Length: 408
Image (cartoon, rainbow, N blue to C red; front, side, top):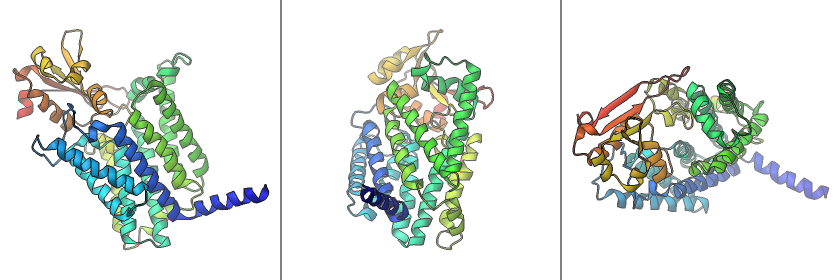
């Protein structure tokens, strides 16, 4: 019995002390998680019967070509991910997956969901390692960079939740199944919201240091298990189920019994071959999210999912335009007390694509321009955006643009 136990302990210790094994396990988990996310948001990637408008970033193809190109590129991406899971030509498959993801995002910004962004960053760092060097020191550096990516995204996710709207709007919806058992007024909800945000910040910071890592790993696993349970209970946003499950595995693979930390990253980033990569990563992960508070960096690139900290868009439509809308869109339309018909973009996107729309004003404008094509009277279709709410009291400004203004 003792001999068998010792044998298992040696296997676990060998796995934990071998950085290359960690990287191989991480690559498999991320590939499987991304593949799961694609399958759970199928119409986002394979738009054979999609009505929710695209929002191309740079690449704008003729309309008749877009579905075929999307399906072709997404099909190749699935093949590359399956090859990565099966360990078939990992270098070529990894590079192919990165290029295909970038092209698909350029064709439609809605694909740049927070989970896609995180997986893409992790893929890029691993590809840089595979193409550059597999020396032991390089592998340790790469592990510390991967840890930095995951840790800083936890920190920013917590920072983004430190606002009034998260506690007053998002948290009550998330806690819906247990609200009857634990009826909470606004003051306890606010304190709970602040506590959840601080826990994420502490988890992210603690994972980056060896001293506080063990309790932070446990906290991260409990947090993801709780979120996963609440989302499954409510049947909400199933694509995020796969992300939460993947993050639990990613946290274990990257941090459990790992000797690398942010200190490893700082020590090795001075190396001439890695200094540039280190500087770019610090800029993207640490500095750029700060700019999101002034609207100079996208919210989804700053950990703002389920934060209550993003703009929300609806489109006011007249009856003639309503009748021309796709069936999925018509089912989401509601009437205000004044009798105006409103098409909420979040609900439409979730019903059609199983992901939220990319929450930026430029994207809402692109989507509305497509709806404007159905309008006979351009002044009767209007984009209404509740801008990012104030941190302390949730106050917000409202932006209104009709089709005529959007054509300018």
